[in-house]
Image (cartoon, rainbow, N blue to C red):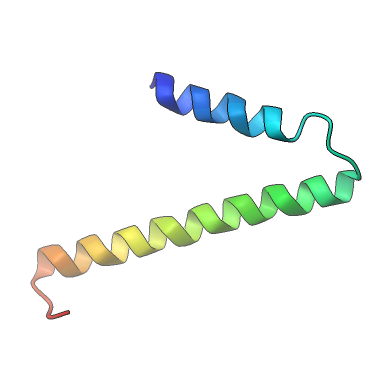
Length: 55
């Protein structure tokens, strides 16, 4: 759990003194979008690996 809190603090520190604010919001949305895509890819890989589908 400490690792997640460390990543959270790094994420918040990265955007502390960033300007303009619309760019900060765009970068935060992009970071979340990339996280969702990575989670979907990881889920798809695990689904294929455990259901025995041919790669």
